[in-house]
Amino acid sequence: NDYFVYKDGKLYCEDVNIQNLASKIGTPFYIYSKKAIIDKINEYKEAFKDYPTLICYALKANSNLSILKIFEEHGLGADIVSGGELYKARKVGIPSNKIVYAGVGKTDVEIIYAINENILSFNVESQMELEVINEIAKRQNKKANISIRINPDVDPKTHPYISTGLKKSKFGIDIGQALDVYKQAVKMENLNVVGIHCHIGSQIMDVSVYKEAVEKTVDLVFKLKKEGIELQFIDIGGGLGVKYYPEDNPPTAFDLANTVLPIVKQTGLKLIIEPGRSLIAQAGALITKVIFTKDKKDKHFVIVDSGMNDLIRPSIYNAYHHIITVEEKQEKMVADIVGPICETGDFFGLDREIGKVNRGDLLAILTAGAYGSSMASNYNVRPKAIEILVDGDKFKIIKEREDYSFITKLEEEVL
Ligand code: LLP
Image (cartoon, rainbow, N blue to C red; front, side, top):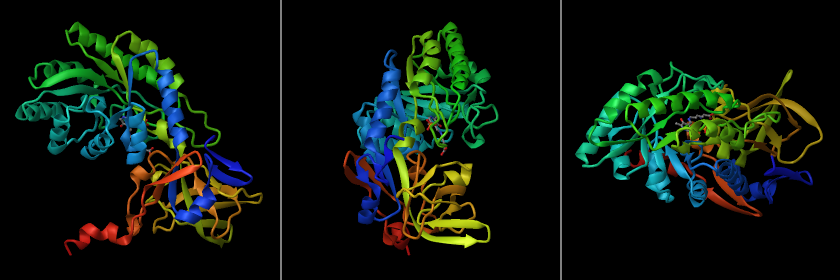
């Protein structure tokens, strides 16, 4: 992409030479281009500028505070799924009235927190949750804003683990039952029924699936109107796909807008969208160093200093991330790029053609800005990769390196 390019055979993020940076700060690290993030924000704003639209960034994609701050500064709201994400969104100053909260298992503590913060909407995923939010709001002497997350039974044609809008999935309330649930909701004294929500899946490469989902949602909006239930907004979730394979040609925010706006317009309701991946994936790469190379009879391995604890997508979704050398190489090799963790699933790429590398060389695992650091763990008691934000020729460490005492602190305290 435009943000990670070779200049004189060396890989740069914007104007920062990645090899030089690595020798200063060590590896592994995530590196993000600020310009890439801002360009994406502007693409979304431009695409939806003719219709009142609130862009709620889905924090789960990447919730580093310095990155959230960029979204906050550009006026975006937040799509959250936990008390922790609410805390982070508020920490960087995202106003409560731009925060929507989805998730099938909100705890009482989380509900109380969000009610007290007066968030824009709980996206309610079950009848029982509706009743509990009403009860808790009553105890707090408050009214909670709610939308019903409907499950439209639409196949997003993506990986089964990230398909969320099928009838068999745990998410949302079946579209057939939604009208009844709305009728009950408007009778509950401590709820304001403000909207309708729908999110069908992630890494969507064919925007026509949005058409189907939004049409079904809008259909319900009209049915509700007939029953005298007037909403303020329609939230169509996130899910726009990004380029992982070099030959991928993902839809843009404009394609999304062109698909959904004509349908949403019929309702006159304000629109909410919840993009996560498509705002941040391209902006980030994971930089890792080759520790060893290893040759078996017909097979070559490149063993690097980052593992599935830093980027788990290849392991759990068999996801493809394009991998390139930080120093451009003429000679090529085919190898499995693997981490040091004691699992066969600990790989970044299998049978990949990459530049011929040696011990000490650096690799860049691309399109790692989304669901990379946010899904990282300390498995094998490995400190997490640090994170760097690049702005032109400047860089800033936005997450420091953990040391062993930090990782074990909460256990040592009680030993
Ligand atoms: N809204 C809701 C209610 C969601 O569940 C999600 C993602 C989003 C918005 C944002 O979707 P996005 O624009 O990022 O596609 N860990 C997986 C992705 C899980 C997505 C879960 N929900 C992965 O690495 O592919």
